[in-house]
Length: 73
Image (cartoon, rainbow, N blue to C red; front, side, top):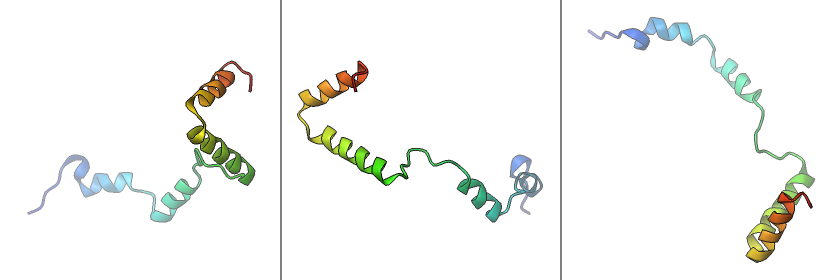
């Protein structure tokens, strides 16, 4: 005989599983996208900045960072 108790029981599971698959898909689709750039111009500019950060000499990177921190950018 298969017996389950507590939150593992089918009765308790049914109480918490009231949303069907389509409800869950809609809920996930409604979530905002964090860290996603949708503007093509903004995406290119961010890619250019990242490429510079990885290709400039470290002294230049430090100078840019110092300027940004000082509010000079």
